[in-house]
Each structure stands twice: as C-alpha cells, then as structure tokens.
Image (cartoon, rainbow, N blue to C red):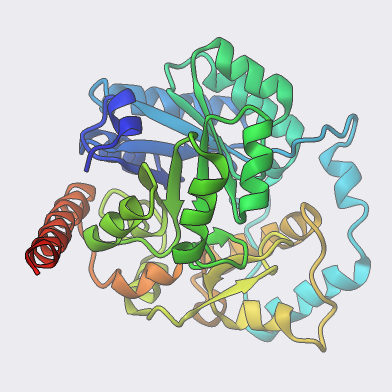
Length: 370
C-alpha cells in the first residue's frame, strides 16, 4: 500500500492513524503506517511532553505526527473563565437534571474532570505546539480548518508537512490557498466532526480540486478493500481513526464502553452537537437523544458546549452509566467486532488490499481480452 506521499515519509503502508492514545500511535508507526497523536485532551504541557517522550521511546525511530485543533483566526485575550461565564444557567440546569434522572454520582471532592477539551481554545493549542516542535514530528494536522498562517510558517521552517481536514471541495481549496501540504477529505461517515458529503463522492472531488496536493481519504474506511477503493479514487493514503478504539493498545478506561463499541452496528451512530457544539458523529445514546430533543434547550456553539458538558462526560465515563455512555466513532464501528492488536489490524488491511487489487486486475484483464 505505497504511494508517492507514503514513500516521501518513509512508510511501508499509506495508512495514517489518528488516535488519542500514545501506545496506539507508536504501534501504528511500528506497523509501517503513520501514527498521529491527537493533542486536544492535553491541557498541561508536561502531560503532552510525557506522552511524546513515550512515543519517541517506543516508535522504533519510525515517523509520527501530531493533530491539534485551532481556528484560523486569532481571538486575543479570551480565557477559559471568560468562556465559562457565557454559559447560560438554564443549560447548566439541564445537565444537572439529566444526570440526576439517570442517577449519575458526583465526582469525588477535589477530583478534577478528566475530560476537559480546552484544547479547542487557541491559546491551549499553541502551548501544545511549543512542546511538539521540540520533537521530530513529521506532520502537523489541524482538525478545525487551516491553522493560522504563523503556525503554518513555523511548521514549514521545521520542514514539517501541514495537513488540514476538509468536508467539501470548497474547504479543500481554501486549505490549498493557505499553504497546506496535505488535505484530509473527511466524509460524512467519519467519527468526530464531519460534513455532509459521503466519502465516495467527496474524495474524488477534493482530489480534483487541489491537484497536485496529496489527499488522504477519511470516513467509512476500515478494511483493505476500502483502502484500495480510496486509492482508486485518487487519494494518496487513508486517514483512519475509529478502527483503533477497540485495539488492545487503546486505553478507553471503560470495559463497558468497549463492549458497546463491539456490539454496535453501522447504524448505531448519529451526528450530534451534544459533545462539542459542532456536528460530530458518535454513538447514539440517551445523552445525545436528550440534547437533540427539540423540547430541550439546544446545544451551545463551540467551545461553550464542550466546557458545559466536560464534568458530566467525565462522570458518565467514570461510573460507566450505560444509557448515557458514548464516544465519537464513525459508521465503520459495525466492522469492529472484536479486540485485536494494531498489528493485527494492519495484517487484515494488507490482506484485504491485496485481494481487492487482484480482483480489479482480473476484471481489467477480462475487459482487455473482450
């Protein structure tokens, strides 16, 4: 599974794996792909440094990257406290009532929420970059459009490739104009923040729109056959996220959540604003249903929604409150039927890819002979 981009980065396989878990990122790189560590959950620079040190020690010298979340336009002087103060009291009451309805216990006194997503705030993302640029990362990805121009310049000064996710050809062209090196075409089927265009339609549209920039296909990809299809559509690799959630190297800290993922079908996800305020595909739960109910107060825009529900999500996950327990995941969850290692996932991908290529070659051979 080699392309011009994978060869440029020294990869055995053109598989880019996004994950919040350093052990998974290192394992992806060791398996011949490209591990990308998601930084959004790191609110303390020392925590990110610790995990990048770990990847350095366990990636066996293979290349890896970092994914941050930051807006293209800067907003100066806004603190987390400033954002918290804008959250309406009625929304806070809705959270309290919903948690009480399901009997969700409080966190212990002095126990901080383990699910703060202040990484959505630009000043936090910039502290992450200050740490990451001291490491030999090979690619910097931004999940919220093109990074600010000065960040792109800093990355290029360090000979890093800069990638950005796009849900439409129009967004992809804006990335190209901003000096982005790699566009990730993220289809409707993907986990997390997605647009409304399916991967089969989106990938070739983006490939044509930004040629000659390399494009990675994301969304609805979890088998070697789907990798082959993405490359046939013009992508120079695939960007996979959901498939790693049930690997043995992942650390979800929740056996109940792992069981829910393994039991879920491809129709058991929903695009909801419940988690961050932007449409994000995740497991459908009674928590997402409550926020999507027209009788409720409605979600708040990013980053207000994420800050509003941070404590609640931590409590739901800590106490494994099954009706409310969920996570961002794509429609590919229907293929995630058993726990396996990252290497086993790669073995399955390569076997499926080879079968798909052989099948197409046979068809092409028959067509040529007719």
